[in-house]
Image (cartoon, rainbow over all chains, first blue to last red; front, side, top):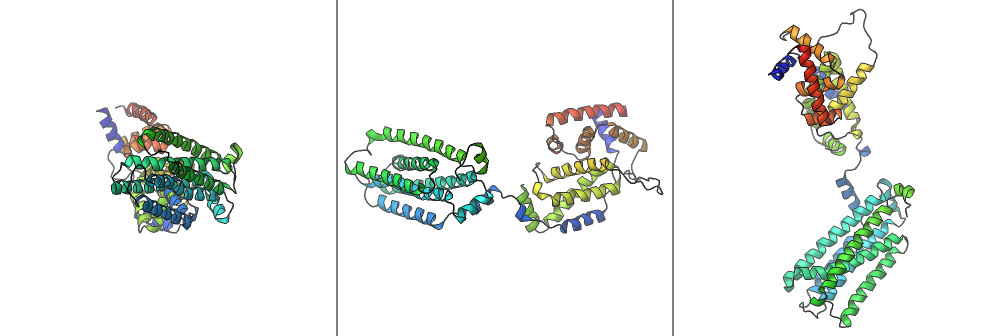
Length: 256
Length: 169
């Protein structure tokens, strides 16, 4: 009741209406203002779109080539436990990951494009973008290929994913460990060596008649998958922490 | 909305700037008017609020609504207005234009309310104006004044008590 009375009292104070001339004057003054869109900070979406232009065409080409090759190989013969298809799917991960290693190693090369990339944004932000792009793209490619393979060959999807993702994770782990070593010039060469080693290992195990694609080795595959995934997370965290650009140069030291 | 999006809207969306000003002009004008009690000064300050907002879009911060941000600018400009020394025209006798329209009801009530409002401290007055005259929600008032919502509620209660005792309700 008292509140209603208070409201009534307060409502007794009214202000005069504004003049439309004042409003028009404000609008005309506002229209004279010159805006400077170039001074604006980028939104995250604009940053993502902008960073896509910095990815070289050869990256997309390599991804397309590896995906095509992978599909050709896995659909070429029926999926038997002793066929080469599982080996092909196992080596597809390291091959796909090589393209990612290329764009990550590129950031640490002091070229004009890389300088241009890192002038406006921190190295950490660019690294995070590239890691995210590579991860999402590869996951989509591997998931699509695994789905096609499963439909085409009538095998379990989880089996295909397991034999594809574990070598992929191992490749990622190796590349990230190399990038964390900060040997700027030869990083790509080391990544290629690690990829070749994994491919050779997969080939050798198959050629030697070692039955790693059978059910009895499933636990080992799962364990390797979990351990390598944890290792990848740890290495990504480390890479992002120590690759932060001028902020971290003072705090923890950096490599660019 | 971020500063970039806002600028994009202003630059590339036809009539957005006019709509933005027209939609918010009355509220900001009334807010200034309740504080200053002078129509012309309130109009000048309202114009300044919009120009300041547009000139400093870089430093735009999201307060939930654009109007909330405009209230923040208006509040700052009102404080600056009171700090500045005023030029008083001696010939006019420092004549001050009353905000009260001629058709308003009981003059005594009105004067009492104005007295009671001016007896409140600055934050309480701000809260009462935003709550009772601008119909703002507690959450928005808390954003505008930069104080927690619980404090706004507490101060509003205090202000209401003071008003009731001054107005003998």
